[in-house]
Image 1 (tube, one colour):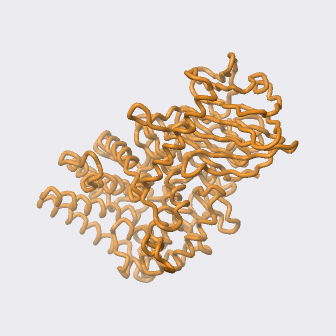
Image 2 (spheres, one colour; image 1 turned 90 degrees about the vertical axis):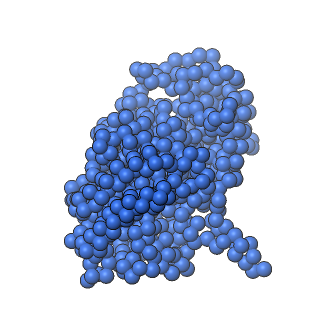
Length: 598
């Protein structure tokens, strides 16, 4: 049975999922949203036929798998059934060179003997065009090329090419090095290049994590979350993908299979907010450039909820036939129709994110009056659309209504614009945006409050509660001690809690009733409990959530409340953000931790 026990390696251009047996089962080239040349993750019962790169398929027993320190370098130790053991080191090069970050679209593998004389067998079987085309091959003195049409994958290695080409087992009597990437010959030997790049990549990640502002407790969990969030950023444009995969279902045979290799404005805001709190401001700067570009480029400033990582590119949703799906649970979808939806909360997400540029003195360039005027145009949309039906934060494909969270984010957007206007001493604009925020706020109180339940409801005039309402304090719409927020938390707990996990919503949608809990929602619930004085209970649930991570500390989108199994696209930024933010909120201070028991 396939699981989501994968390590992730990457460099903010490409990323790969590596199994416990050192098989690369997912990697898109030449970037995060590209063709998955390694796609066995989504080939079900046909996974053995192609779309992977493994080392010892019949003879390997997993011994251990870990990240090397606080890095994105993965080490897997395997034992041969015939005796002996070896390690596989996987990474994507990333380090400083010539005053900038060097991050080529390539993967590197180093295989080293550990004990005895292990036999290995290399199987490199990429597939092209989403699993529909087996490539042609050609060989040189120390490289192999795999190509279909204009797409080429090159392997340069000091391993015996004949053994690799014919998949013949051989004794590993010394280290071998493999470089996968574009059709460009290396300028030095594979051994020297891999060794140098490995050392510099480890040094980069060690330095990057050294400057994180981590909490006293749960430091390893937070550091791993931060590194994983960084790997979900496409640094060339500043976009942040929601996850690195497509079409891993939210629950078994649910049909809830979506492509998450795109930048959701809402999700990305939460990512940069978390990384900013951790002190990783460069990702925030890059994202602010991305979101400012897409916001100003949209005709009439009409924002979409999701964008390709290169904004001008296509993301029409379609099903691909070459992949049968995770555990044969198709369909496999490429693109996402959410780009065509109206989700009115995105105006608030953009304004909340970009507002950082007016107040954060760490940034090299602060926001000016021209940027404020651009944001005001988005604010005009927020004010006009606050009480218009939309697809909502959960992207319902058929039901529509006036969703409370969307309206609240429009109010928050207007309130934030008033704060920026106050910074520029624009009294008239302060009054204008404050009035807009007040108008929307009162409309929400009138239309979305259910006195019978003592709670806000998901949509105006409805009766159901959804987990996005737990964010009303987080985004600044309500204070934590507001009786209306306390009542809403209690209602969400009654309707959505299953054990210590929270569902997004409990009512059926286009695909039936939800069967799995949305990991991020449980973290939202944890934060709401902490904010409303139930701190010890929040800590207990947080500790339980840590047990749902895989062996490397990573989370996907969803959790089965009965089995605890991970489902949904992986690794999910929403989930990793929730973990990091909850840890920072719940941890004892450094002073408390260091002096405890003294």
